[in-house]
Image (cartoon, rainbow, N blue to C red; front, side, top):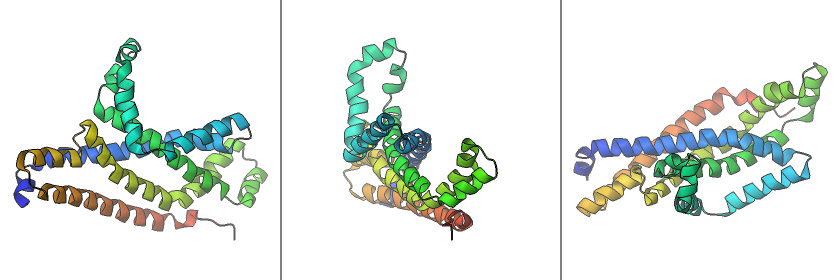
Length: 228
């Protein structure tokens, strides 16, 4: 088994890099997509609220693998139209399609985490911000968001770990992530031990994420204000 690791270090390095990049970028971009979705869910405008709810419901209610197939294979059928729009360069790349699927999927979950965190902010804190003369935007940026982030850290960490493990799905659309490299090496050697190496790669990254998140939660414990 060790020979499969030492003899293919470059392949494993590329696979691990692709896995970490897909996960990190998917969560990062997903966060910025999640903010307007969460705002729409909390909006008094029923049309906006229902549209955001519909998006979250559909994305969370369908498998991520199906979403990846729709983006990679489904949109690939419109390559002529995409070429005309100058967007084919993006959708012809399996990595980009996987990243888009992760971003849209993670945004749905993160929007619900954000919405729950915002709703949990004590009203007294918001009223205190108004009493200090802060604008609605300033209250949101300086009061609501810091408390929300503190409350959402554990759930956000879980989403990061879940997306990391789900990233193995992109190997099906030819992305050379950790599992993709394992499948490539297995096709040459027919040795199942390569999948133990792949599992170890995922486990190590998960342990690193958990260690970082425990440190973040300890350092930001003061953000978990309950209003007591």
